[in-house]
Length: 143
Image (cartoon, rainbow, N blue to C red; front, side, top):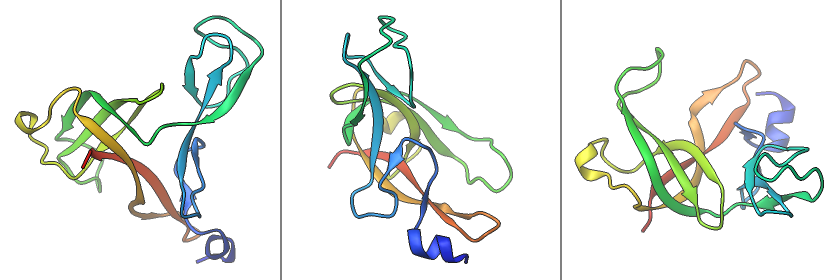
């Protein structure tokens, strides 16, 4: 493992996952000060109201509701199937895609609008060529 990986801890899988090497990882969005729309990734213009100023970083909620899902049965080699790909509307604003875990991949057991929590965990044991590990976010049914 490279020295930089040991010093920093796991790397985030996406730019909007912050605090990857800490005890308090979180998702970061950008909120328009004009209309309140929330987006992932940095923006110079709000696509909802057209504002060019007042877009600031904001910490996204770690809870939400399941908006949509799909049970995936075929994927790239090395990816275990079936898994649940989900879209979640976060409490307080923002919509994000990720995998729903800790629930059986059976549509009969998954409910639309069910409360979910955002959890952070190792990105399925994957490492890059330098031996760096990664942390990702997942959704799980709320306790």
